[in-house]
Amino acid sequence: GENVEQHPSTLSVQEGDSAVIKCTYSDSASNYFPWYKQELGKRPQLIIDIRSNVGEKKDQRIAVTLNKTAKHFSLHITETQPEDSAVYFCAPLWGSARQLTFGSGTQLTVLP
Amino acid sequence: EAQVTQNPRYLITVTGKKLTVTCSQNMNHEYMSWYRQDPGLGLRQIYYSMNVEVTDKGDVPEGYKVSRKEKRNFPLILESPSPNQTSLYFCASSLLAAQTREQYFGPGTRLTVT
Image (cartoon, rainbow over all chains, first blue to last red; front, side, top):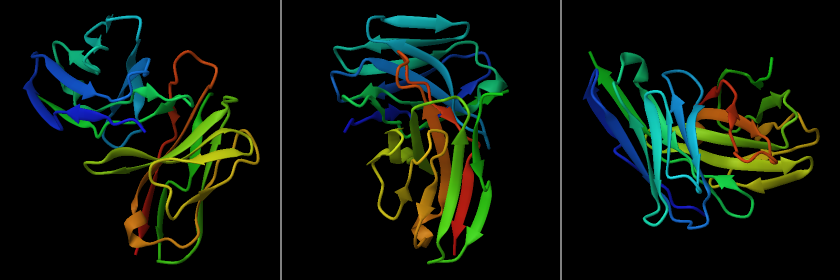
Protein backbone atom coordinates (compact mmCIF):
# COMPACT_ATOMS: atom_id res chain seq x y z
CA GLY A 1 0.00 0.00 0.00
CA GLU A 2 0.87 3.67 0.00
CA ASN A 3 3.28 4.92 2.65
CA VAL A 4 2.16 8.39 3.74
CA GLU A 5 4.01 10.64 6.16
CA GLN A 6 2.73 13.97 7.37
CA HIS A 7 4.74 16.65 9.19
CA PRO A 8 4.62 18.28 11.60
CA SER A 9 2.28 16.44 13.94
CA THR A 10 1.54 19.64 15.85
CA LEU A 11 1.90 23.26 14.78
CA SER A 12 1.21 26.45 16.71
CA VAL A 13 1.18 29.82 14.95
CA GLN A 14 0.21 33.33 15.90
CA GLU A 15 -2.97 34.65 14.38
CA GLY A 16 -2.16 36.30 11.06
CA ASP A 17 0.94 34.19 10.43
CA SER A 18 1.22 31.47 7.80
CA ALA A 19 1.17 27.70 8.35
CA VAL A 20 2.62 24.97 6.14
CA ILE A 21 1.98 21.24 6.46
CA LYS A 22 3.84 18.72 4.34
CA CYS A 23 2.83 15.26 3.16
CA THR A 24 5.13 12.73 1.53
CA TYR A 25 3.93 9.62 -0.28
CA SER A 26 5.52 6.58 -1.85
CA ASP A 27 3.42 5.59 -4.90
CA SER A 28 4.78 7.43 -7.95
CA ALA A 29 1.51 6.65 -9.76
CA SER A 30 -0.54 8.72 -7.29
CA ASN A 31 -2.45 11.39 -9.21
CA TYR A 32 -4.82 13.04 -6.77
CA PHE A 33 -3.82 14.87 -3.59
CA PRO A 34 -6.50 16.16 -1.19
CA TRP A 35 -6.40 17.82 2.19
CA TYR A 36 -9.10 17.30 4.81
CA LYS A 37 -9.89 19.44 7.84
CA GLN A 38 -11.38 18.03 11.02
CA GLU A 39 -12.61 20.50 13.61
CA LEU A 40 -12.91 19.36 17.19
CA GLY A 41 -15.74 16.86 17.59
CA LYS A 42 -16.67 16.93 13.92
CA ARG A 43 -16.18 14.80 10.85
CA PRO A 44 -13.34 15.34 8.36
CA GLN A 45 -14.21 17.48 5.35
CA LEU A 46 -12.39 18.12 2.10
CA ILE A 47 -10.97 21.65 1.92
CA ILE A 48 -8.75 21.59 -1.14
CA ASP A 49 -7.31 19.13 -3.62
CA ILE A 50 -4.94 19.05 -6.55
CA ARG A 51 -4.41 16.75 -9.50
CA SER A 52 -1.03 15.68 -10.77
CA ASN A 53 -1.15 17.81 -13.91
CA VAL A 54 -1.20 20.97 -11.79
CA GLY A 55 1.62 22.31 -9.60
CA GLU A 56 -0.36 24.67 -7.39
CA LYS A 57 -3.95 25.46 -6.57
CA LYS A 58 -5.31 28.32 -4.46
CA ASP A 59 -8.63 28.95 -2.80
CA GLN A 60 -8.66 32.23 -0.91
CA ARG A 61 -6.31 31.79 2.06
CA ILE A 62 -5.46 28.15 1.44
CA ALA A 63 -3.27 26.64 -1.24
CA VAL A 64 -1.82 23.26 -2.10
CA THR A 65 1.48 22.76 -3.92
CA LEU A 66 2.69 19.54 -5.48
CA ASN A 67 6.18 18.27 -6.22
CA LYS A 68 5.71 14.99 -8.06
CA THR A 69 9.44 14.44 -8.56
CA ALA A 70 10.07 14.54 -4.84
CA LYS A 71 6.70 12.89 -4.06
CA HIS A 72 5.39 15.42 -1.64
CA PHE A 73 2.62 17.99 -1.46
CA SER A 74 1.97 20.76 1.00
CA LEU A 75 -0.93 22.70 2.47
CA HIS A 76 -0.38 26.43 2.91
CA ILE A 77 -2.64 28.60 5.02
CA THR A 78 -2.01 32.34 4.99
CA GLU A 79 -3.32 34.99 7.39
CA THR A 80 -4.35 32.31 9.85
CA GLN A 81 -7.46 32.84 11.96
CA PRO A 82 -8.71 31.10 15.12
CA GLU A 83 -11.23 29.12 13.05
CA ASP A 84 -8.32 27.50 11.22
CA SER A 85 -7.49 25.61 14.42
CA ALA A 86 -8.21 21.95 13.59
CA VAL A 87 -6.57 18.69 12.61
CA TYR A 88 -5.52 18.51 8.97
CA PHE A 89 -5.06 15.28 7.05
CA CYS A 90 -3.51 14.58 3.68
CA ALA A 91 -4.89 11.57 1.76
CA PRO A 92 -3.17 10.81 -1.55
CA LEU A 93 -5.01 8.53 -3.97
CA TRP A 94 -3.09 5.47 -5.12
CA GLY A 95 -3.28 2.08 -6.76
CA SER A 96 -5.52 0.57 -9.41
CA ALA A 97 -8.45 0.61 -6.98
CA ARG A 98 -7.78 4.32 -6.38
CA GLN A 99 -7.55 3.98 -2.65
CA LEU A 100 -7.01 6.80 -0.20
CA THR A 101 -4.47 6.50 2.60
CA PHE A 102 -4.73 9.20 5.25
CA GLY A 103 -1.72 10.75 6.90
CA SER A 104 -1.50 10.73 10.68
CA GLY A 105 -2.75 14.30 10.94
CA THR A 106 -1.45 17.72 12.00
CA GLN A 107 -2.99 19.55 14.93
CA LEU A 108 -2.88 23.24 14.00
CA THR A 109 -3.45 25.75 16.78
CA VAL A 110 -3.82 29.42 15.94
CA LEU A 111 -2.96 31.54 18.97
CA PRO A 112 -4.79 34.87 19.40
CA GLU B 1 -30.24 16.57 1.99
CA ALA B 2 -27.22 14.55 0.83
CA GLN B 3 -25.69 12.83 3.81
CA VAL B 4 -24.03 9.85 5.43
CA THR B 5 -25.62 8.67 8.66
CA GLN B 6 -24.27 6.37 11.35
CA ASN B 7 -25.93 4.73 14.30
CA PRO B 8 -25.42 4.64 17.15
CA ARG B 9 -23.36 7.78 17.76
CA TYR B 10 -22.14 6.55 21.12
CA LEU B 11 -21.88 3.01 22.42
CA ILE B 12 -20.48 1.49 25.58
CA THR B 13 -20.34 -2.29 25.59
CA VAL B 14 -18.57 -5.19 27.23
CA THR B 15 -15.94 -7.54 25.86
CA GLY B 16 -17.37 -10.28 23.68
CA LYS B 17 -20.86 -8.85 23.13
CA LYS B 18 -21.53 -8.71 19.40
CA LEU B 19 -22.46 -5.32 18.01
CA THR B 20 -23.27 -3.67 14.70
CA VAL B 21 -22.72 -0.06 13.69
CA THR B 22 -24.92 0.96 10.79
CA CYS B 23 -23.95 3.30 7.97
CA SER B 24 -26.25 4.63 5.28
CA GLN B 25 -25.81 7.13 2.44
CA ASN B 26 -28.39 8.70 0.15
CA MET B 27 -26.06 9.91 -2.61
CA ASN B 28 -26.03 6.72 -4.71
CA HIS B 29 -22.29 6.36 -4.10
CA GLU B 30 -20.68 3.11 -5.18
CA TYR B 31 -17.71 3.34 -2.82
CA MET B 32 -18.12 3.04 0.94
CA SER B 33 -15.50 2.64 3.62
CA TRP B 34 -14.98 2.33 7.37
CA TYR B 35 -12.19 4.06 9.26
CA ARG B 36 -11.11 4.10 12.85
CA GLN B 37 -9.50 7.16 14.37
CA ASP B 38 -7.11 6.92 17.28
CA PRO B 39 -4.93 9.69 18.75
CA GLY B 40 -1.68 10.08 16.82
CA LEU B 41 -2.61 7.44 14.26
CA GLY B 42 -4.87 9.38 11.95
CA LEU B 43 -7.64 7.64 10.05
CA ARG B 44 -6.95 3.99 9.36
CA GLN B 45 -9.09 2.09 6.91
CA ILE B 46 -10.80 -1.05 8.19
CA TYR B 47 -12.78 -2.28 5.18
CA TYR B 48 -14.03 -0.81 1.95
CA SER B 49 -16.57 -1.70 -0.71
CA MET B 50 -16.48 -0.77 -4.38
CA ASN B 51 -20.10 -1.81 -4.95
CA VAL B 52 -22.86 -4.17 -3.84
CA GLU B 53 -21.48 -7.56 -2.75
CA VAL B 54 -17.88 -6.34 -3.31
CA THR B 55 -15.87 -5.78 -0.14
CA ASP B 56 -12.17 -5.82 0.65
CA LYS B 57 -9.83 -5.43 3.60
CA GLY B 58 -8.22 -2.15 4.45
CA ASP B 59 -5.19 -1.66 6.67
CA VAL B 60 -6.67 -2.86 9.99
CA PRO B 61 -9.42 -5.45 9.29
CA GLU B 62 -8.75 -7.86 12.16
CA GLY B 63 -11.74 -8.26 14.47
CA TYR B 64 -14.21 -6.63 12.07
CA LYS B 65 -16.67 -7.78 9.44
CA VAL B 66 -18.73 -5.87 6.89
CA SER B 67 -21.45 -6.57 4.37
CA ARG B 68 -22.81 -4.70 1.36
CA LYS B 69 -26.16 -6.17 0.44
CA GLU B 70 -27.60 -2.84 -0.68
CA LYS B 71 -25.88 0.11 -2.30
CA ARG B 72 -26.87 2.57 0.41
CA ASN B 73 -25.92 0.51 3.49
CA PHE B 74 -22.55 -0.67 4.77
CA PRO B 75 -22.75 -2.01 8.35
CA LEU B 76 -19.69 -2.68 10.47
CA ILE B 77 -19.88 -5.79 12.64
CA LEU B 78 -17.78 -6.59 15.68
CA GLU B 79 -18.43 -10.25 16.44
CA SER B 80 -16.50 -10.29 19.71
CA PRO B 81 -15.40 -6.78 20.67
CA SER B 82 -12.25 -6.30 22.71
CA PRO B 83 -10.94 -3.24 24.60
CA ASN B 84 -8.40 -2.49 21.83
CA GLN B 85 -11.35 -1.75 19.55
CA THR B 86 -12.28 1.23 21.68
CA SER B 87 -12.08 4.03 19.14
CA LEU B 88 -13.90 6.64 17.08
CA TYR B 89 -15.32 5.09 13.92
CA PHE B 90 -16.20 6.90 10.71
CA CYS B 91 -18.08 5.66 7.72
CA ALA B 92 -17.46 7.42 4.40
CA SER B 93 -18.73 7.22 0.85
CA SER B 94 -17.69 8.56 -2.53
CA LEU B 95 -18.40 8.32 -6.24
CA LEU B 96 -16.15 5.90 -8.12
CA ALA B 97 -16.57 7.63 -11.44
CA ALA B 98 -15.59 11.07 -10.18
CA GLN B 99 -12.24 12.50 -11.20
CA THR B 100 -11.61 13.13 -7.56
CA ARG B 101 -12.43 10.78 -4.75
CA GLU B 102 -13.95 13.20 -2.22
CA GLN B 103 -14.92 11.23 0.82
CA TYR B 104 -18.19 12.21 2.50
CA PHE B 105 -17.96 11.22 6.14
CA GLY B 106 -20.65 10.27 8.60
CA PRO B 107 -20.79 11.96 12.01
CA GLY B 108 -18.78 9.23 13.74
CA THR B 109 -19.49 6.56 16.33
CA ARG B 110 -17.60 6.61 19.60
CA LEU B 111 -17.24 3.05 20.83
CA THR B 112 -15.99 2.04 24.27
CA VAL B 113 -15.38 -1.63 25.04
CA THR B 114 -14.87 -2.46 28.72
